[in-house]
Length: 188
Image (cartoon, rainbow, N blue to C red; front, side, top):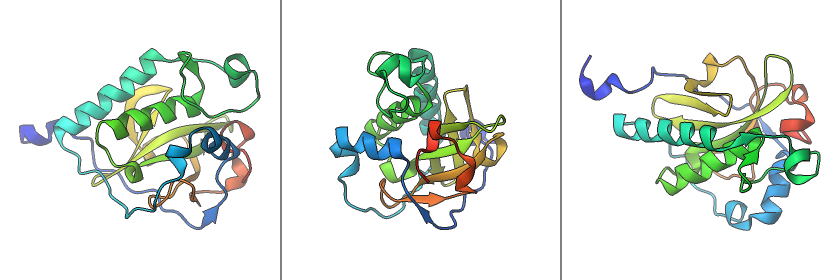
């Protein structure tokens, strides 16, 4: 195997949407505080062209956020049941990890339409949020539960919904949206 491709992940598939759905309540609430993240123009899909250098940077940001944020429930951090926000206090839950990763990757030059907030259910049936990276090699999941970035189909998750590539306020069904709980999905 040539050295240039030695650090790239195995090719994955793409999570294919099958219809529109409402944005999670947490995203809509996030948008009331972070207008710059939501009041944006629609863009053409732009999967990231992964290179070994870029993949290394993505892995570094994923690991850095996972290591720097303490996992904590929204009740402990914000005093409410559900709130999506940046973990500015150094603590947060799954959505907060994913939002910070998204922000840092956008600041690193990755187009926002390739970084999709995604709602899944975990192996216990609980709602969970991850960040999906759409690339020329498929869709990859950045998760606060592991530093390993996996192809979406290699996780133990059931995918429920994700942001549209064209606009962050448009969400698409990936699986059965009735499977997710309030923790990650809010309203369906």
